[in-house]
Image (cartoon, rainbow, N blue to C red):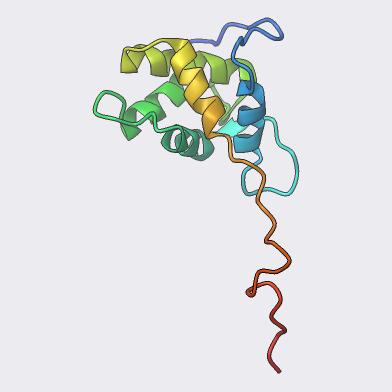
Length: 130
């Protein structure tokens, strides 16, 4: 039974025209992990959609799961970058906006590097109590 899954077309390397999109993809892939990962699971795809503020009345949590399922190859549980780009096309179609707008929102949602506290901050200069 096919369940409406379609194979994601192989996108040529560098097909994305949105700067920072691949970096954002890798940041969300590696979220919560010390190692650098290159595949995105469903939970992290949902987090990406929330953080990019893509969820609204037209595109819900259920739609996130459906978009993920449509582009994920049968028997796999994670997306490659090419499949991720196809998922963003489905998100844009469901939301009724351009793919470039969705890609820009995702690139903007990439988590910045954690800031280090200033050395004069009183909370970082406390000694542990004995």
